Image (cartoon, rainbow, N blue to C red):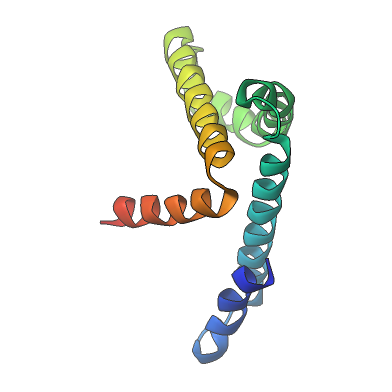
Length: 127
């Protein structure tokens, strides 16, 4: 994990407008992502469906609660918000398939392969 944090820590040395908050956020994001991948690899001694069974409630809590506190009140004030079950359901299925694919890839290969695939995915998105 230290090797992953090193480029971010060294990069801002030549930066004209160095911002410690940005570097701290980036270092935190890398540390949490590395921790998440290691924990997923430990969980993947189980079946990927069982892993999703244990991880999905955490995803729900850590994504739904901030959405209710931060985004939902603003959404209610500024727009005519109505809940569309079809769009929500298709997004739900896509998120389930994505998480299942991540667990299968990490389970069959390693967390490092998933991390490298994520970098390649970012390159494709940028291109």
